[in-house]
Amino acid sequence: MYMHKRSKHKPMVQCEVCKKQFAFANQLKIHMTLHTGEKPYQCEQCSRSFRLIKDYRWHMATHDSDTSYVCEVCQKSFKLLRYLQAHVRTHSKELITSDEYSAWYEQIKSDKQNEEQIRALKSRIRKLENGTMMNV
Image (cartoon, one colour):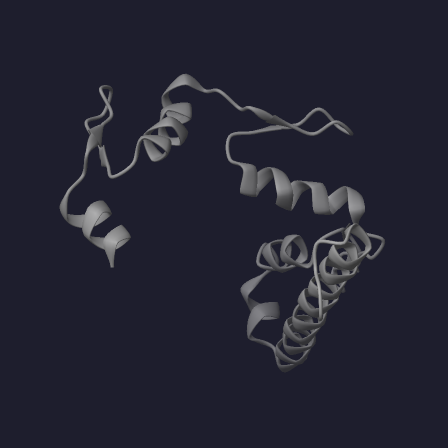
C-alpha cells in the first residue's frame, strides 16, 4: 500500500525535461535514459545495448537458448518463442483466421508454458548449485 500511495498520490521527484513525476529517485534515473539515449546494458556476445536491464536479460536468452522455433509458413527460425509469436502476426489475415493456424497457435501457447516451466527449473538448479537455495 505504501508503494501505491507514494507512486500514485505523492510523487516526490520530477523530470526536468518532460515534467513527469516519480515517487522514487531511482525511477527518475531510469526514466532519464529516455532523454539522454544512454543504454548502459551491453551484450558481450553481440555488442547490442539496452536501456533497461529487463530487456537485456530477455536478449541474453537468445544466446543461451538451445532450442529454436520455426515458422510453419515461411520456415524462418527464432531462438525465443515470443519472437516467433510476433513474427507469425506478419503473415496474411487469411492465415490468422484459419483453423490450421488456430490449432498451431494453441500448440505454441502450450510450448510457451513448457518453456517457462523449464526456465524456472533451470533457475532452481542454478540456485541449488550456487548454494543460494535450501530445502526445495
